[in-house]
Image (cartoon, rainbow, N blue to C red; front, side, top):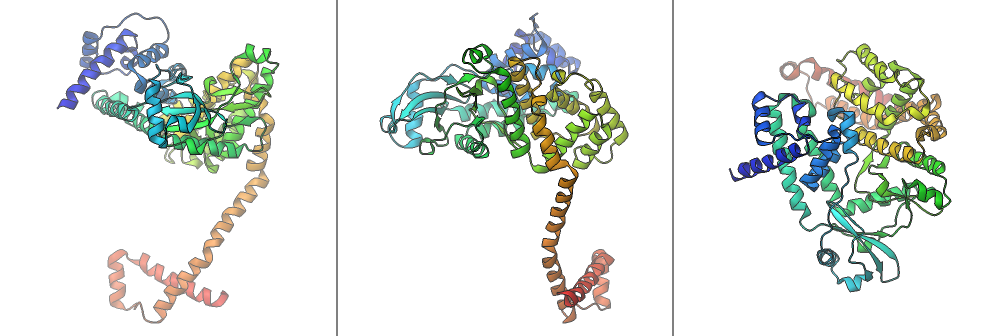
Length: 510
């Protein structure tokens, strides 16, 4: 009962904050029951606030606190649910908070690493250089002279987010009960995805591991670097990395003043992102300008690996075929990919889906490359495929959001250049190597060999079964057959006969 009262009081605060920023329209767009609309108007009268719906919603979520900022960032990956315009505005939510006291940061570091700050570091700057909802960063210097950045979780952050997540889940379930139309947004699923993401971000060892894996993938690539991890100074609540020097990637004027070519940087960004997604199947999913810097030699350096995405080989192949189908106007290919991958259920109308894909692709077909946004194409595709009961694909939604951010960075550096066009040689090479005729032959051969690897074991097992039958271990008399028939009929009989045949084959050929 106390929890319900507390949640209702918090719900009232949320409604009033949304109303103050004129963001309740987002809820009203769902057409809730009249009684709900009346209650909202009574307890939270709307204010006339300029700006787009997404901008007003972003401002309201910022005012509600860090948990709601994370919720907004999660919704920004769901253009299929909240709409492309709102998702684009939410993607610009800044995860910035007032810093917590340096004394608390020092206490956390000492508790986690088991030694005084003076022993761990030769210097430690009490003024944080960045503060977000989950952690803040301090510059320091190790005892052997390395200049490092120390990321420290906020005190009590785990409990604070647990309370917010519990509230979100309660609100999501409440929305599904009283606003049936909200079920298409799958609010409970959105909250669960958010909870999983935040849980990963709050274990800094996982972030260190993600950075280390990315560094290994790019160890021989001079165009991209990852700050080194100081593992001895890293734990669940503390992450220590090499301190990097560079210019934020969207600061065009600074880049030009430093003698760097913005067009070359866009090309590098395109190649790096392409390699992450298609070559490695593991990508940095939070490459906003605050996390990507340009080193003096022009190489990109990315920090903050708290959010990453992973794509297996089949998903990468399906994604490549799907994008290729759109770019060449082969909508049957687009439809076939979705059905073959199992994204769209087999009982859906393939012809209708192909028509929907054409409705998305034709408006962009023939446009100048600089005007084509693959991220927006994917967003529209996810919106349409919901009508065909396509299940949510979190890895593709995260990819779409990351592509949108990268495209935004590229256009900030040069609005007339399309970063995917710059990466075209890599794309064509990858497609030839992985989706061309020769690659498909190799793929078929590998699958066949994988099946052949299991054949000796299968035949061995069949031979053993045949031996059991031959030695009287299983008697196929009338009583046995009757029992088998009662338990599943001729399927069991067929299996035993197959075992006998397998034993005979094994004796002849092995």
